[in-house]
Each structure stands twice: as structure tokens, then as C-alpha cells.
Image 1 (cartoon, rainbow, N blue to C red):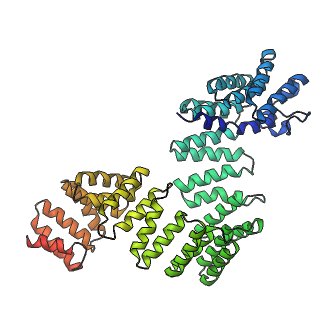
Image 2: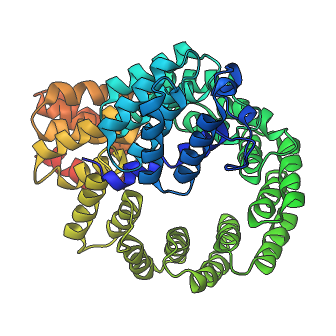
Length: 505
């Protein structure tokens, strides 16, 4: 069960929306009725008596000031004499929701919805309450009813989009976002960003760009929209458009993000000296912003100046000692400098942070694999990464490789999970095939290594793997021939000694 307090806080956002609905000429709540979308399509409010309008304003003011029990009392008094005022029931529903009395809130909102003919806001609030309570299908019904009642209320398709996104139905979520954006105000930047981020995860950068770039053209587009559009344009090779947007960011409010973006464009155009100077200036202009150090360190690392990169990362770590990106960058630079033990020490610091991620653990484990004597710690790091992120196919694959000799059945299970997530990875298929062979499933292993060897016949490791399959199948002639082929391709390849031992048996 969710924390009730966290649920009730969610509905405070509707206090502002309701404030727009129930503003009066008395100024009790500083807004006008025209600003509220649901009330724009009805003259209900205008037909209320002055005393009724004053009661609504007082209830709304109490709600706005978080005096929820006061708001409830006023709304109930009004309902006792005028039970047909939809607005009173809506305020009551909000007051109850913010007191964690969710079932009563839903009932009040149902009464409000019955009295409205067009306004769908009570249904949307009801849907949000039900969704937060875990009653997803009831929530969907409320949202769909809201959408049918008022197709111009963009919050209904937005709610359906968020619900589909939670359920992993990204295509359905995208369609609802598209519908919401068509009817939402042009400056609803949050909605456009939500759709953009969804597409970045599940679709292509170009699809995401198609959503955010037109929004970034608006004069009042905030920095986060400009940056998102600029970076996507940069990724898609639209360098002039990216430069224009980053410069708009710089004019609007100079920041590390715009400076880094402009430097990235210089780098993409081959002006490495200009890019480096821009990044160094960003460190000078924003000496307390770790992103400046990270960007400069990454640039220096990309030019193989690992010592300078390490110094830069360490400059940032003086400001933020536990910054994960700086720790990872410093660890990588130390590895490149041949200081493996220092790189591992830094990676341990990264993985020991309370908020460490699966990627942090995978990085540590990958470094531990390079040194002898860390086998148990390596396995433990990969296992913890899988516990944190069960679909981390790199951890699944690498742990399978580590345990394949000791526990082939476990390795096969891990490798199969990795293959289900990343079926096109040759490395994963290699691990899966080898685990299958070790577990005694020669048919599965043969099918995998036949395909891998066919795609890369000159790879001595894959040739060796296929040879071991043939030997396990009892085909000594083909097996020995493949072993000889592997050794001829590279006498010192990774499994050369194993191949020679197999030939000498």
C-alpha cells in the first residue's frame, strides 16, 4: 500500500486549478473564471446567486490555504442547501482527498461529475485517486469517460498516456501524448518533454526530435526545452540548428549546458582547439559546476590525454567527492594510465555510495575481472547489479561467463535471460552457446555456434567453440579439423592451449 501522505500531497496541484475555476469578483482567490478550462464551456457559474458564489470562493480560499477541514465544512454547508451545485461537490472531493479520505472523495467527485454536462475535471481527479490507490482499471474508465465527455480537455489524454507509460505500453502512451499535444496550450512544455523522453527510451532520436523541435521554436521556450532540442539536433547531425538553439540558451541565461553544447558542435566540426578552449573557459566561468569538469575531462580523455583528464576529474571531485560521473571518469583515466589498482579503488568508491546503481557495480566488476584474486568479489558485484536491475543484460552475461565452469545450469539460465533482452549481441550468443554446451545441450550449442561461425569464419575463438561442439557430438574428424583451423588463424589466441590439449588427447 502506498504512503497515504504521499497520495494526498498529489492532489494539492488541483487546488490551483480549482482556484482558477471559482474565482469571484470579490478577489477572494486571485484568478478569473475564464482561466479555468472546464468552466469556459458553461454559464453555470454565472447563474449562481451571490451568496452561493461567495460560499464557493470561501471554500476555495480555505482549500488554497491548505485548510482542508474548513473547506470541507463550507462545501458541505452549501451542499446541504444547494445539492445541485457541481462546483461544491468538486471542492468537497478535493478537500477530502487532501485529508486522505479517498473513498469519500471519489463519491463526492462522482456527484460533481453527474451534475456537470461538459466539465470533465472531477473524472480526471477521480482517475488520479484511483490510480494512486492501485485501482488501474477503474482509473482508466474514469479517464476514458472524461475524454469522451470533453475531448478538448488535454489532461484526460495526458493521464491515459502516463498510465500506459507506467504499464510499459509505450506506443499507446505515445498516441495519447500526441492527442494531448494537439489540444493543449502551445506553451505546455512539460507535456512535450514527457512525450520526447518517452520516445528517447522506446523509439528513435529523430522521432523525439520531431516532437520537441517545433516547441523549441517558441519565443518563450524554457532552457530545458532548448537544451533537449539542441542536443537531439546535434545527435542527428543538424549542427547549425543545434548551434542556434544553444546560443539562444546562452542569451537567455548563460550556463554550463550551453557552453558544453557549443563546444560539442566545434568538436563535431573538427575544431578541436576551439572546443578545448571553450570547455576550459566553462570551467573558469562556472568553477563550482561539476558538469564543466566532467565535460573537459571527457574531452581530454577522448584525445588520449589521460593524465590531464584525471587532473580535471579530480578538480571536480574536490567540489563533489561522490559525484558518480566524475568517479567513473577518474577510474577510467587511471585504467588507461595503467594504474589498475587505483582504478579499482576509485570504482569501489563509486559502488559503495548509498545511491549506487547497477551500472556502477558492472563497472567495478569489469575492472575486478582484469586482476587475479577478485573472483568472489566480481561475482558478488555482478549479482548485486542484477538484483538492482534484473534486465541488465551485461551483468547477466558476464556473471554467466564467470560461473559456467562451476555451475553450468545457473550459467545457462543467466545467459538465456541476457539473450532474451539482447538477442542481437554476438557476445551474449557466444556465452549462451558455451553455457549450453557445458550444460549438455549440444543441439542448442551447435545451432548457436553454427550461426556465429558462419557470420565470422575467421574468428579463432568461435572456430574453437564450434570444434568443441563437434567433439561433444562425437564428430572427431570435423572437430579436429576446426581446432587446427583455429590454431592456424592465430597460434596464440585465447584458447590456444585448450585447443592443443584437445588435439593431443
